[in-house]
Length: 200
Image (tube, rainbow, N blue to C red; front, top):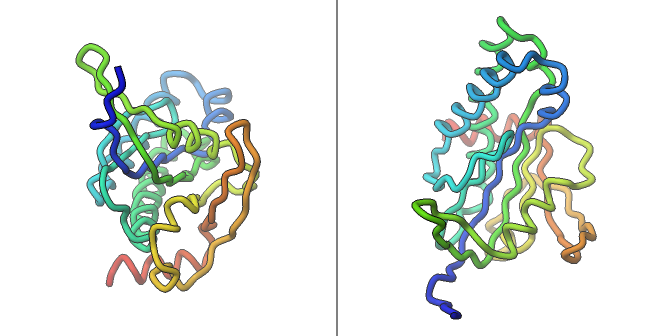
C-alpha cells in the first residue's frame, strides 16, 4: 500500500572516522573498541545543531533532520566543533594508545526526500538520498579531514548565502548515477575561519 504522507524532505549528515579500518587491523580489540567508543561519544556530544541520531554504524554516525536545511556556514561550524572535540579526545586516548594518531573525521551532507518506517520498536530511515550519501563516503577525495556537501543541499540557498571561502566542486559517477558536490578540506585557512566563526 502506497502512503506518501510519511515522505518528508530533510538532511542526512554522516560523520565518519577516517583511518578506522587500518586502526582496527593494527590495534588490540579491547583497546581499539574502547578508543572508538570514546571518540563516537564526543561526536554525539558535539552535535550542537540538534540533529537526530538514526544509527551508529561501526565507525560512522548517521544524523538526520527534517525540514529546511541549515545554512552551509552553520554546517561548517558544526563540523569544526566536532573536529575540535574529536582531536581533544585523541590527545587523551594517545596516552593509552598512540595509534589513534592515524584517525580523523570526514562528513557527508545530503538533502532530499526521506521516509521513516518501523521494525518492531526500531525506527529506520528509507530513501534514495540514504543510498547516495553512503556511496559518497567512497569518493576520490584523497584527504582524511573534510566535509562534503552535495549540490542538492547547496542549491537550496542563493549563491550570496554561501561561505566566502570556496570549497572544491566536482562530480563522480556511481552505480546510482552522477553525484555532484562541493567539499571543504580542513586546511589552515579553513581552521582560521572556523575558529573566528566559533567565537562570533
